[in-house]
Amino acid sequence: MLREIVVYPDKRLKFISKEVSAYNGALHDLLDDMYDTMIACNGVGLAAIQIGVASRVLIINIPLEDNGGDSYGEERNPHDQPKENTLEMINPVIVEADGTEKFQEGCLSVPGFYEDVERAKHVKVTYFDREGVQHTLEDDDFLAVAIQHEIDHLDGKVFIEKLSYIKRKKFEKDWKRKQKEGLI
Ligand SMILES: [Zn+2]
Image: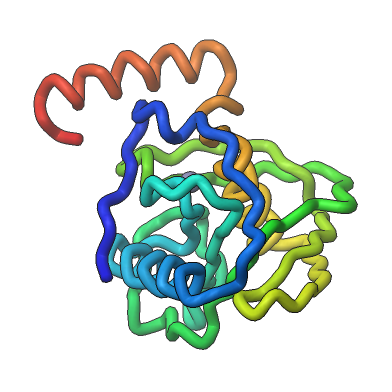
């Protein structure tokens, strides 16, 4: 089922999401709705709070053909994102992070805006799947960027908070103008 995307500066994007304790049908429905919504919006990642649910749940689906592209959050061809390729992470925790890398990011909650963000190059993360089985994953490429971006959402952070003061100011001004003009 499609759910509505929470758009910046909605206050819910600042919520600290709560840990999931029940790996039940409600969680599976949430994950399925998140996938449907992300695909409908041509996204590559989505945190539960972006559909208004403050649970530590995120999904990432990196398109098969265009593995990464130039920008995280860029519009994608949905045919390249089969559901079985979706990485579902419940209660994810970054246990190691090192190096730095700049990558252009976007976000379904900040539609149409892309900017370079600096993050760790390599991360190791532990998480649970929809059945409650724990996994560990390491990456030093596009997926590492995606994981850090989405986990930030679980902690009430949006990528624009990582912009320099000047870029952030310009963003806020442009965003207000777009809102006034009804473009968002
Ligand atoms: Zn985002």
